[in-house]
Image 1 (cartoon, helix red, strand yellow):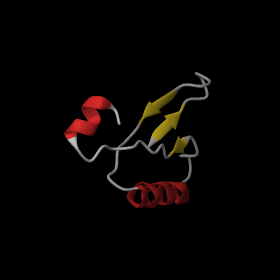
Image 2 (cartoon, helix red, strand yellow):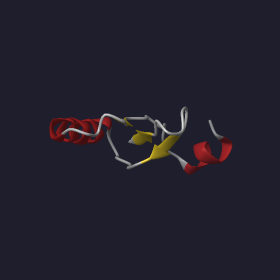
Image 3 (tube, one colour):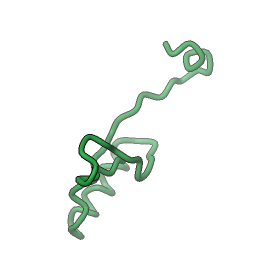
Image 4 (spheres, rainbow, N blue to C red):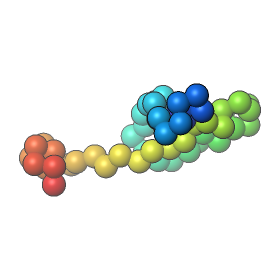
Length: 58
């Protein structure tokens, strides 16, 4: 989950992390109902399954 700051165009800041997109989407929907959280968005980051893949960025 990232925060888009209108005071700093093009800058994104991490606001939270989830293990699945579904979890992030549920929170985003719940916050959307509360209002005032329009600047939050989901940013998908690939996770390597094996340490060797991470070391070599495969």
